[in-house]
Length: 329
Ligand SMILES: [Zn+2]
Ligand SMILES: [Zn+2]
Image (cartoon, rainbow, N blue to C red; front, side, top):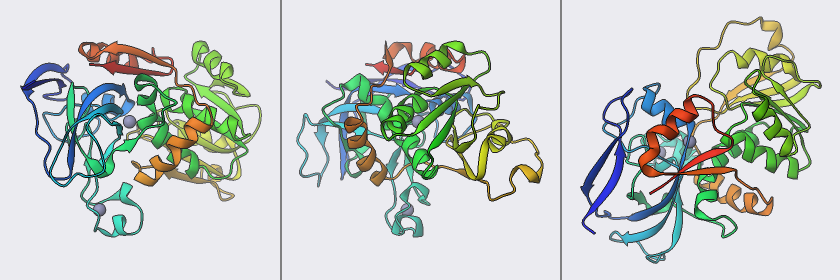
């Protein structure tokens, strides 16, 4: 095979375009991955809609499950045919203060898959072998894909929420449906707050074991120890602050959010905190992926052909997705 297929973004606001390109050759330290499945993440929507700005043209997609198809120079200990996952953090420099202090998620000179390096809305992609994960056998390709970002960055947000016995999840999409399962397995009470009136998402949340589900315009029936905001809606920050206990934490898990409206200082008072989560470290993946298997997480996925990437993004934009969408080349 001398060519590959990709769905390419030429400019924000435009539909992705199917392109045929020469098959890329992996450079030193890289692998080429034959993509088996690639999840559709809200961040892809932010890239396509121009909410965040990376490299153009770009092939989106950073929840990649595939098999190693070719090895670049110096890649050892990984055989052609091995199944790997390729996440959002595609490369970190290894020598900036952030990398050296175990916070490669904040690296000064990173590459992000599907944002500043071509991603997995494609038949093939390249990856830095050091940033590819082995995947637990418990998940088939399509069901593993959402673990690579919704699961993994969701898990980083979950850890950031601290030792919360009562956890509120604002926005019950791909990330929340995974993290709710982990949290419930760990004995926590999970309350789901969806778009007002989205009874389908609320039923979905209750079906996964959430203790309560309602609209994000409501105060939940009990005070939260912590809240995680997966919905990119700034107005949820003051809403969640009102819902957390003294000392409670509100974790903003998305890469982009609409502006946060002004709110009274009294709502932050008593040591409530607002924090954000950026990207992931490899250590997050090494911790989360086995945990997801041990917890018996079942991702709810709808698989679509790669050629339907634009339709998939549109469904996500309209909030018409239960669980996660996954593209299959
Ligand atoms: Zn760095
Ligand atoms: Zn993502």
